Image 1 (tube, rainbow, N blue to C red):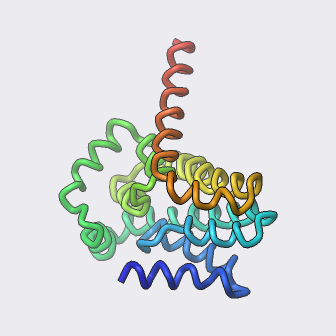
Image 2: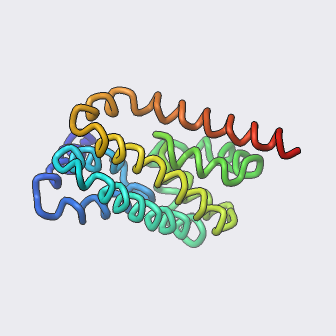
Length: 194
């Protein structure tokens, strides 16, 4: 079933509605849909590398608005909708663990989930359920999601279609390396400030 969904997502790159489909996919993936928008972002960008930064912007805005919708689901509809989405991804037993992560790390959890291949939708919904400060949530989401999509779009803009296979092959490792470097950077800054 996931393969059919994946193929369905990719087919939008061959239509005149590719940009709208990218926005809709980014929105839905941030709140409930299983296929990440990266697959369509990469496909559209490889076809038209000069528009890759525009596609990254569309993807970022759609994802941020979808994250806000996920937050709303957790905040107002956790019992009716949010729990079903968490169950669908098999993370019901991780719910309390995610609560502890939020109490310890707050915006870091949203930022890391927003950038890495971790299912971001689970963290948007739980952020609302746990009443995480919305402004903090919004800023962490905007930074992490934009960084994720603009790195992909920027690489394709700079290097063209030949970077496509590299991104697909090493995306998870690159995302983890970026998060490690980001955390290291903040630790260094905190060390020098204090």
